[in-house]
Image (cartoon, rainbow, N blue to C red; front, side, top):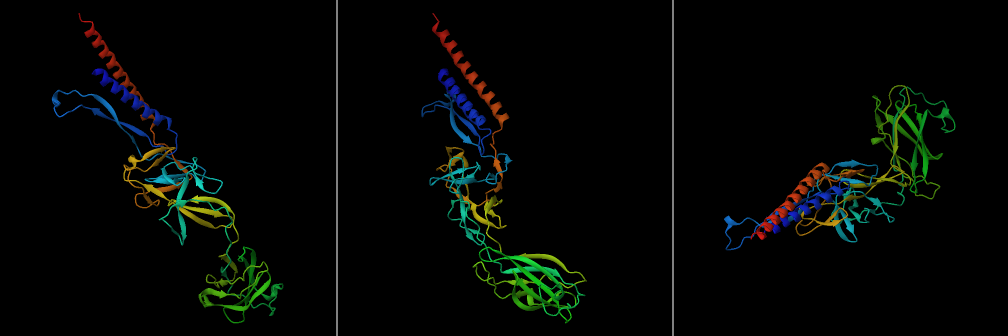
Length: 405
């Protein structure tokens, strides 16, 4: 009997060494979760057994339990390196079958899909517009490879100060080539529906009436509208046009684009002091853009950035959690599959409920404590030696009995 008991101890110590060796081997594996060997006593108990006289029958490996503690976050220079700070798993599609991982080293395949090294596709909630995402149907996250379409200018905002002591220009007839026919001028770049740039120039002409200015607008040197007035109150604030909005007549570009219908917004314009100043110029159109990069925010929203300064939300990363993560089935390549023991996957979004935040440009390191594993290795080795010594002792006792004459 001691031989069988000691043999079970040898097997247990060997299994413990195997688990420890696997932990040590994966100390630098991204997203790896260490395992712990758990053992149980073997006790032969029958209906007629006398418990007080039973000595036990050895030990057995009852479970190899995964330890889903947080690993350190290591920062990288790749925007598609992703780490979860807190609970949750990335959702992957492996030819239609779902897998779950904490390893966030992703890249882009030749079709624009975001994948890991095994070709499994990262899942995200599609953009539904208006900053909303279709959280009911995760799909493959695919990066935009085409150009970002242009948008025509509909409004230009001018933050100016016109001098309160300005004189009426000596030349009454406005002529953009004659500086004596206007007081001041400024320009802003606008865009048509095809993304072509045009220059809108605004001329300011002091009127004989107090606190009143006339404006002339040209786009690419062509007049857009007749004289329109800007009137200020006695404290220098804008009084007219109402709300600061000065609509312009539609202007037809030579590029074949649709007519530009826009308004000049003078809401931030004042009449103070004796100096002309341009404090701000902006407009809401933009030209065609090429993809320059990708970024991911803490909530898992993936943005494509373009050369025209625009960014487009491509989707929001889908995360999964489980009632019992230790019940997940290991499928290799630092990934897990759901099982009866884990419970069904609970899909959600980063930063909500029990899900952690997303860190872009970072990877979660293995949670293996190398020092602790080396100590565990020594402990397992001593256990193995002790059980081997028990077999040797039992052999000596048996030999002594055999030698009795």
